[in-house]
Each structure stands twice: as C-alpha cells, then as structure tokens.
Length: 81
Image 1 (cartoon, rainbow, N blue to C red):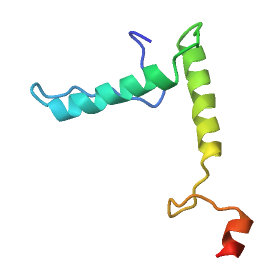
Image 2 (image 1 turned 90 degrees about the horizontal axis):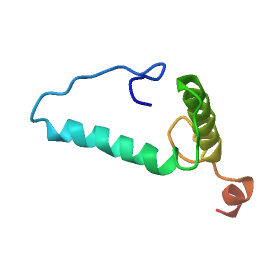
Image 3 (image 1 turned 60 degrees about the vertical axis):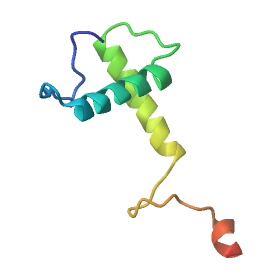
C-alpha cells in the first residue's frame, strides 16, 4: 500500500548505482504482485497485514520443514527405503 510500512518492516535507502540491491527489491515486489495481491481487496493497511499474515502461515503449513530445512516425509516414504 503506498505510503505505509508493514509491521516489522524497515526502510532501507539503497546506494545510487546499486543495481543488485534494487533488483532484489523489485523481484520481491513482483512476487507479491503476482502471487499475493491478485483478486484481493484491502480496506486499509491493517487489513492488508492481516491477509498477508494468514497467507504466509498457510504457506508455512503447506511445506513443513525440520530444523535442517529438509521437507518432512510421510511414514510410508521412510519405511519404503
């Protein structure tokens, strides 16, 4: 949302002529515009944040990871090996 900063976010001013940093920001923005925002409507910045939090939690549950970062395997997978 223009003019607002999500909770936990911080503003970072990039050096002029730092294309790698700008590209990282642009890729994140493009990802959000293409995956989170389509078809959604936001009443205000709080509504945006609540919807984003729910979306992120749903994504975390879809791909559970252990402490090493490996995806959890079902029991039948472990017994078949």
